[in-house]
Image (cartoon, rainbow, N blue to C red; front, side, top):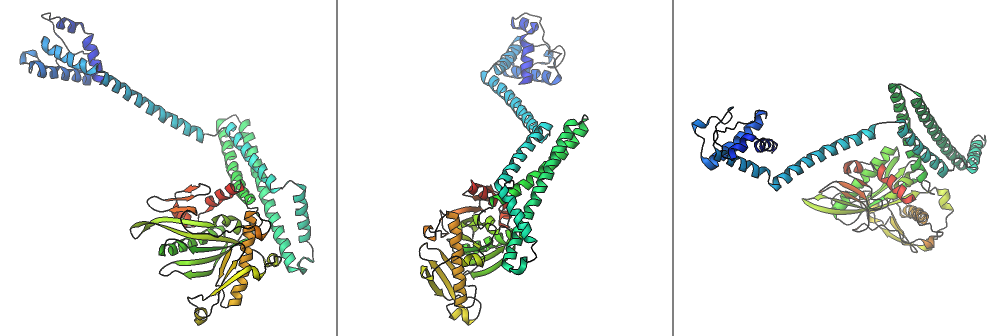
Length: 493
């Protein structure tokens, strides 16, 4: 189109053509010599097309099309001009040409804008770093206020614990000595974290001051990189401390016990139970916790219908309490897309001295006894050693088959009921057990707290926080940090 446009411009403005159209004898026409060769070729093709369509092929005495002085008759020239003019002056062609030009211009403009935006995002400046410093300082101060670090009550309690830890008679009472040393370790750890926050903040502030004072561009860039490095360390420490502040519940610092049981889905649900067990074992290993399977019931054909895990570590219950609920899996099974459900219940492992202070009459409980089955000899297969305890008022139910005798399992079941009631009471902020509503997990459609999709696409989505991840295999391997952090922040709000 560009070549034809230039060719038409030269044809319509040529005085030689005007004379030929007026049928003046003796006139001749030559291809404009100032046009580049491709454009002269395009003009020659137009003339040739007109010749073939209107007047037949040019004879030998007409000369060559691209010669300096080709002799053209009037009909041939008129046909060529009309054909090219009609083609170029068509409104549809002009609109398409202008549209293509605008599209090409807009694409290049968008590309330039995207490149500029990316360069702005990656370019450091003292002003941008100052804004980053102020934002990090605001988050730092907010964490300190939530923790109460600068309050007199916190400092007085810390001083009292340090003084008690130096008491020579500390270990006369084993239980009290352990409690004091645990609190002392907590205060010391937090003091170390606060010292690290202050150090990184000072490093960034000093680097920014040097960057503003330097004159040479290379020195300014060096100090800005130093400030960015200190900022990254500072923000990473703040993120971890914010998570600890969110784990400030009554039982968050305790160990946890997880019960995973099969729901709707048949044999696939038992396989899904094993997958969830591996996921929580992997998460515990990443956290440096001690993980132990304390109970388990095999499925009819594959997998496990019930698994109980005990996880011991720092803030085990606080980090895992958000896993409580129904977990839904969508995947290909035997050539079909199947949906499977499993239930997860999380309870804190409360120390015996705290449980002893809770009065729970056995009359408020209903007990069922059953044979455990599975490996263990004739005792577990013939004697009803398994115990199921149900709290009549709330419907809270626990099941225990850990030990070989019925009295031992009954004692453990009562302890589990107390732990579960206390955990639910804390979650529902109930003042008494009688105010607790039923909290039984029903592992079926419509009750899920998290969806794991393996087919036809891969995604993990928490229905409570809308947090999504596409690296499903990493999640199933135990990488739950982002999901847990999203839940803690959502629940705190």
